[in-house]
Each structure stands twice: as structure tokens, then as C-alpha cells.
Amino acid sequence: MTREHFGPPWARAGSRGEPPAADDAAAWIAGAIPDDWFNGRPEVTIDRDEIVIVGRLPEPALGDGATDAEKTAAEAGRVASFREGTRDRRIGIAQQLEHRYRRKVAWGMTCGGTSELFTTLAAPTMTRLRQPERQVLDTLVDAGVARSRSEALAWCVRLVGEHADSWLGSLREAMGAVDELRRQGPSL
Image 1: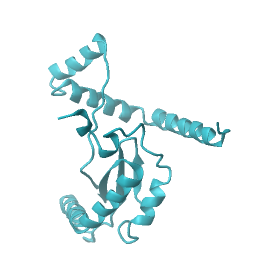
Image 2 (image 1 turned 90 degrees about the vertical axis):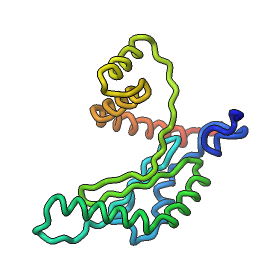
Image 3 (image 1 turned 60 degrees about the vertical axis):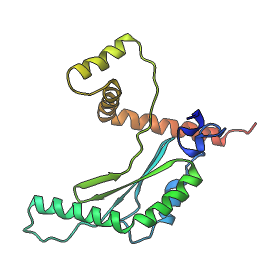
Image 4 (image 1 turned 180 degrees about the vertical axis):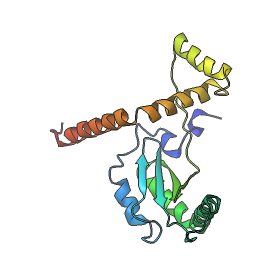
């Protein structure tokens, strides 16, 4: 198999660089989805590879006497029913988004305390690590925390993300401000 067969369609056969900006994607999605699907606008998260759309579904009416297990089961049923009932329409919207923004699209639902993501992308990420960093990963593998260096690296990234949310949020805001200044600057 030749190299151009790997990766998403927009990265094959001589396509160049980054996908287009997706600054208006959340608004486009809000206009494309039916008004009765979610309670409010869906949460839209975008990176270079993927657009993840998570909608909030109304909680099932079970009454005051429902146990936690019954609530969890009812919420899971609501999510599963919505997923199956909207599959064709969601696929159509996703295809339009993939064409427009050159990114894969994943959907997710939240209902009460239940959240589920459907078919999210696991994008390969290449990195070069020196021996001390590789030893950290190998320790995690040897301790049974992860099955491989790849899984250990993903575990480390999740751990940093959980413990550095406020710092990462500030960093993202600062990067957004820099992007806005670039857009306002003189064109060459």
C-alpha cells in the first residue's frame, strides 16, 4: 500500500497543510441540527483532527421514588434511543461538516449524570523522547498502569489535562487573543 492511502481523505494525494479554520463551526452546527434535538446548544470541541458535538438530552421523568440505578438505566436508554433514532440525520450532518471543515466528526450525548461519546477519533501522534522520558513510560508499563508506551503516554497526557485545566484554559484564551490580533493586523 502506498503512503497516500493513510490518513483522512483531505490529507491524501497531495493535499496541503492544516484544515481550514473552523471558527464558525459551532454556529453552523447550531443551524444544521433540528431545534428539538437538545436542551440548548450543543457543546462543540474542535482541534486539527476532529469536531466533537455533545448535546444535552432531557432527563426521563421517573418520579421522586426512582433509585439511582433506575435513573442511570433510564438515562442510558434515552441516550441509546436518541443515538439510534437520529443516526441517518447525524451522519448526513457529519458528512457536510467533514467536507466543509476537513475534520472527522464525532457525536456525544449527556442525559442527567450519563454521558457517552460515539465513535471518537484516536489520532496517532508522533514524538521523539529521550531516555529519561522513555523510562517514565516504561515504568508505567512495568507497573501495569498501561499496556504499552503509547497507552502510557496517553495516560500522562490525560493526567496533565486533569490537573492543569485552569492553566490550559488560560493558555487557550491567550492563544485565541493572539489569533485575533493576527486577524486584525495588516495583510501582506
